[in-house]
Image 1 (cartoon, rainbow, N blue to C red):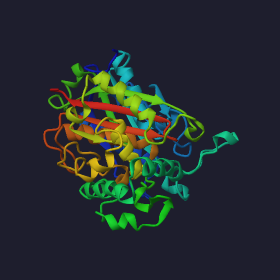
Image 2 (cartoon, rainbow, N blue to C red):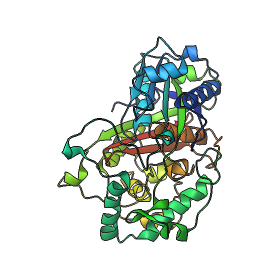
Image 3 (cartoon, rainbow, N blue to C red):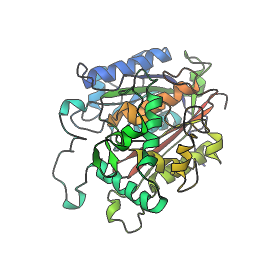
Length: 390
């Protein structure tokens, strides 16, 4: 089995506050995150040999020239990575491959998105003409298809969804860099205006601006950095891509996401994890909508199929529960600047494993998982990180 295990280490992380950052440009955000990561690692920009940057939208930046220009890191290879909501985590995966291959000793993985300046309702449209077969419904309507199906098949209801929102807003209320930091009540979620039935306002994550970055090197070199005693190892990283049009796919059942299932399976194999519910200490999983987190919990093997609603309601995914999920507050509280989210989740897991979380700290966390789901359930990325003593 080909794996990144014992080949790649994270030695520095940085991220901005996420939110409506009207006084910051995408250049400001990326510079703030990257130089925080460099300072965290005790490194200088000149030591970075290659960089990958997650950017979904062209108005944030086009080509590798955008991050190179923002950071004034000229002369090294820079690549813009676009893979729907998994763009940032895919940038990280590519940086890991660059180091693991022996091509680079120090690589930068980062992501940035500046959405709020566009003045649109919901996610901005991608530019250019498209085939009629590729006309997407709005994101809430895409995920509402899964919610209505799960209401029918699993017997879930609005209260089932509300439990996720209440949990994540409670977690996010403790995080200084979250977009939203206010706990909410179950009745707030249930009675909120409908966006796309059954998903209401509090079932949907917000748009946001933000940036995050990680400095990656080999475990051998990590021992000479500022985090020589608590660098974090990459145990596994995988991506799986499926159909762009699940509503036209005859075998798509809308009660699970094959991309998440396969990416999780591959990452677990790389990390040598047999029982994720017992071997993982925390999970940052994609919760663009409340229904998304529920299905991802099942697809990642944290609970049996059809049981995520009960699993969350019983408090298993709360801070202090059996397997804490989205202790940062998740996308529900941070919002979702597309290109930055994957890197932000990896920053969260890294700091948790180092015992220096900015929000709630999971006690003695040894292994953590970060997960993205992008497009119409099309692409999923799963990364597993571990303390250097695991």
